[in-house]
Amino acid sequence: MNLARFPRIRLGHLPTPLEPMENLSKHLGGPRLWIKRDDATGLSTGGNKTRKLEYLMADALAQHDGAGADTVITQGATQSNHARQTAAAAAKLGLACHILLEDRTGYEDAAYARSGNVLLDLLHGATISRFPGGTDMAAAMEARAAELRAEGHRPYVIPGGGSNPVGALGYVNAALELVNQAAEMGLRIDHLVHATGSSGTQAGLVAGLVALNAGIPVLGIGVRAPRPQQEANVLSLAQRTAAHLGLPEGTVRAEHVVANCDYVGQGYGIPTEGMVDAIRLLAEKEGILLDPVYSGKGMAGLIDLVRQGRFGKDENVVFLHTGGAVGLFAYPDAFGVG
Ligand SMILES: *Cc1c(COP(=O)(O)O)cnc(C)c1O
Image (cartoon, protein in one colour):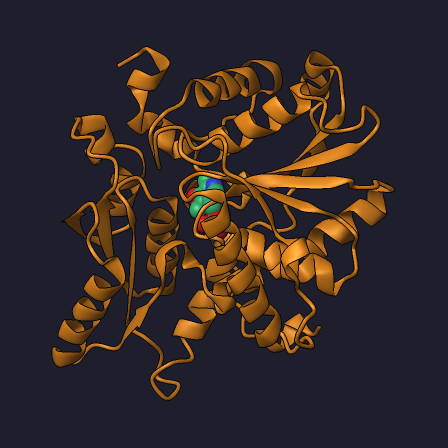
């Protein structure tokens, strides 16, 4: 695996810290819980999309026979962290940014529709357009790209969540970073747990860790799709990412991909009691802010699995904090302060 042959633009503050969560570990009575701070990547308050955008934006600037894209188009839910970080990356690189937002939750209050990530999208100068839930967003992006091309622009379409084999390279890089960091610290990582949505994070981690023969199992906590669909999505993208990396076919197999989708609740972006409790607990015990859509549900899953005794007391479990705390400002009602 030779990651350096893929073009990359530095956008993040890397490596991100890997820190113990001593108070939470004590509170839960073990295992040894650690946190990998990908919420601290820097770009527009940070988050996991920064790593993907390092490769996606480099690819955008290599398109159109080397002239480079002049506009990026992407899509997400109203409170998309991916949209916000894409808008910031485009601003930094001097590209126009069109963000297509899908109303997946049906929330209409001002905080949800205009605060949090939406406020930051606008501050970064992105053009926002809104679509009803259930819209074919990939088709909507292609239609926008066609319009822009007809006007003489050079658009580059980034899929939702930045999840394709180019974006997933960011998490192959994160796998390398984590394994090196653990080696320097003398830390044996027994499990890596994180929130999984559009699949690029888990797919990149799995492809990278398997390629490194790291022996670190990854558990994705789902936030949207049921388990069979989530695992199929991750496996497909992990295998396509491995192929993009030039790894032999059969390197990534179904047994490497595990998702637990028991903590979604009523649906994507809809608060659960476990999410609220997990966010309060991390805020009070560790001074760490999680987010209501992804890392809060991911941590709710991890805490529940710890309480079920699924991890050995002496095991080291790393939670990958994927960011998104800006989304807290869109959900004041969930925390009783609306
Ligand atoms: C996008 C996102 C995720 C999920 O990552 P995927 O690569 O889409 O699976 C997790 N946490 C946060 C905060 C995110 O914004």
